[in-house]
Image 1 (cartoon, rainbow, N blue to C red):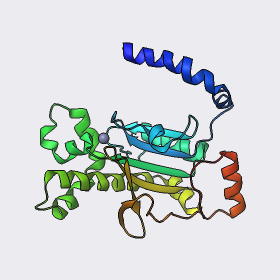
Image 2: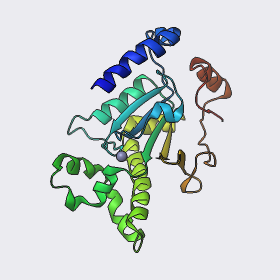
Image 3: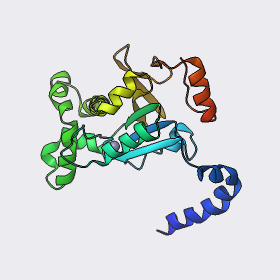
Image 4: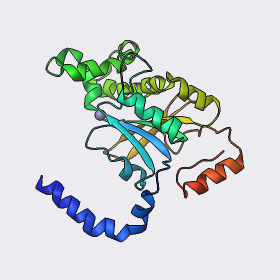
Amino acid sequence: MTRIIKGVFDFQKNVHGTREQLFKNLGSGQKPLALFITCSDSRISPDMLTQTQPGELFIMRNAGNIVSPYSWDHASGEAATLEYAVKQLKVREVIICGHAKCGAIHGLLNMDKLDALPEVKRWLQFSEPVLAALKRDTEGMSQEEILAIGIERNVLQQLENVKSYPFVREAVDRGELRLHAWVYHFETGTVLAHDQTKKRFVSLSDATKPKFNATKEEIESYIKSHQGGMDLTI
Ligand SMILES: [Zn+2]
C-alpha cells in the first residue's frame, strides 16, 4: 500500500495543485468524448494510451472487455454504464479496446482449466460465440496465433453485444453514435482498429473512419463544446 499512498501524495502535491483550473472545471459536470471499454488488465492505461485528461473518457473495465448482451432478466453493470453513456452523456463514440496477451481470452480458449475460477468461467459465456468459428479457422496455428485472433474476434463479438441494446442501435441509426473495435499491443504501443470496409484489423492510422450523419455545423459545435479531442472528420 505504501507505494500507492505515496502516489496519492505525489499526485496532490505535483499534479493536482499545478492544474487547478482543469480540476475546478470538472466540478461543473462531465461531457466525455467517448465510452472506452477495456480489460481490467493492469498493463492498460486508457488515459495514457489516448493521452486524454480527466473528463474526456467514460471508462468501463472488466475481465476481457466483455459486455453482457441486452436482457431484462438480470441487472448488469455493463448495461447500466452503456445506457448512461449513450442516453445521458450522449457520447458520440464507443470504443471497445481489447489487448494483446489477454488472460481472459486465454481462459476462454482453455475453459477446461477454469474450474478453480467459476465466476470467470461464467462471465466468459458472453464471449463463447467466438469459439466455434475460431476452432474451424485456426486449425494448425500456434497457441499464440490462435490467442491473437481470439482477442480480435472477442472485440468484434462485444461490438455485437453492444449493438444488441436498442438505444445503441437507435443512436447509430440516427447517426449520433459510432462504434469502434480496437486491439492494443502494449509491448509495441501499436493499436489496430477493425476496418468495416476492409473487414479486418488494420493499423489505426489506416482504418477507414466511419462517418457521422451530423452536419458540419453540428460537429463543429460538438468539437467546440469538448474543447478539441477526438478526430471527428466527416
Ligand atoms: Zn485482458
